Image (cartoon, rainbow, N blue to C red; front, top):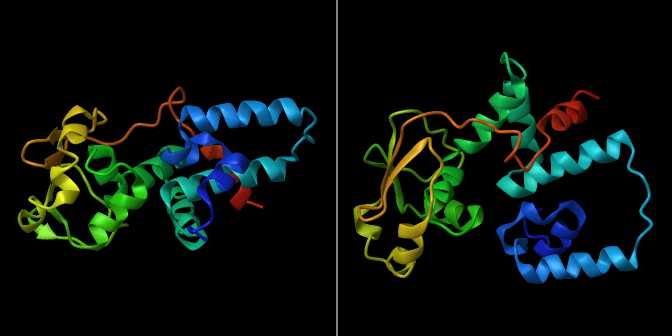
Length: 200
C-alpha cells in the first residue's frame, strides 16, 4: 500500500501528499499535463471524499484500518475535525518529522521503529504512539553520533518547528508545549470530507 510510486500518487491526489513531490520539477510536470489534458470529468461527491481520505492516508503513511480508527475516535469528540487532526499530528513519527529531525514522515517512522527516539527518557519503537503536552522527545544517547543525525545537523538547526513544539536542535530534544491547532489557511486536507466518506 505505502510502496506505491510517489509521483503516481501525487499526480492523482496532489503535490502536498509527499515531500518528494513538493519540487519545481513536479510543478512544471503538472503544469504541462494540465495544458495537455484540459478536459477533466467532474468528480462526484463520493470521488471527492475518496480523494480527500486518500490524501490523509498517504500523507501520514497509515493504513485504512488505522485511519478508520482515528475517525471513529474523533467522532466521539465535540469538534471531530480538530480531534482527527490532533490524533494524526500527535503520532510520534509525525512529531519527529515536525521537529525537523527527519526530512519525511517515512524516514521519521523508520527512526522510531529502529529505536533512535526516546519519549520521557524511555526508548519508543511504536510510530503511532500518541504524545501529549509535557512529553520530552529526544534522540537516544547511543544514536546521537550516527550519520543519520550528524549529516543533517544544519538542516535540523534551520528547521522551523510548529508552535506546539519547543526544539533544542543542538541537544536533539523537543518538548511538547501545547496541542496542534488546525488552521483552515494552512491545512492541506479537507477533513470534513473524510468524515463524510466514512459516514456512508
